[in-house]
Length: 406
Image (cartoon, rainbow, N blue to C red; front, side, top):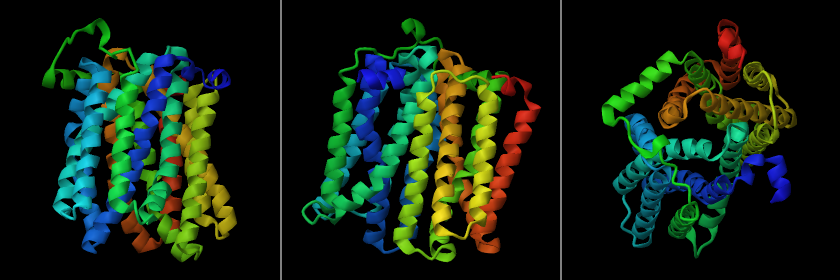
């Protein structure tokens, strides 16, 4: 661990290390859950629309409870919030497993369970991100945020294929896979009991509650020009850049003619790049001119997407997607770090809840780009989106002197 602590100094903090390592099984279980739920819903109904329905059940709570989730993270013990949300996540997996194994599962069960788990996840994320920032010193904040992103990217890369393998084993199948996910959530609960830091708010007392605290958080962001521009800069790639992932099946089938196996390789190249980008940011001890670096990464993200849209060679496409993954994950990791660094600790939960709320725009971006892909083709859509992203990042970088000076 000493060599890892030298490369990733945030892991030298015993509490952060316990939180980061302990959360990995839960993050992996969530990535498996997303895959298995969609697969099983389609198997259960035979209708592709059922996949969208269960995703709607999981996604709506994020729109409704993101801001309250931030208030809770700022005013209560973050460790306790994580324990409670993990219990609900584990309970959702257990109930689903029982329904599947008994043959009683119906689509409305999956929607209801997904809504409960989505609500828990909405309260979980602001608490986890702000708890990470509370456990490490400011000097190691970028390292901690990037490690969180790296863990997510690794689990995103491993979760779907692991779930697919488990489903394919006859004596495990779908029901057994849900059981395994429940065990993984239980491991997270066990790890949280090993952390003695409670993650209580500064001073240990609540200064505001409820609606007033929520409004206070919104006003804080409104008057913090740096945090506000950083939140806007997090929205640009979500609307214009990240939706390219939803169009990867179109590229695999109609551009490179590689089929499902080729699609898997395209996504893997992108995922490996994303993991590498997160680890690169995490391994940097000091990074000067962070605002300018993020601007450069955003422009690289957009231009590499534009280049990908022009590529007709499958092998070259894999290489370009690797660069896209590096640029996108580095940009987002640095963005999350700068948001935390430039907001007061007492507002971390509420700021991160609004940051997570920006990711709710991803389905909208997917829908818009999908419509354009049908009209003008997937390559042109991704290319235009990439150029708009690069231009947006450049313009906001030019307009905001405080952002460039970070």
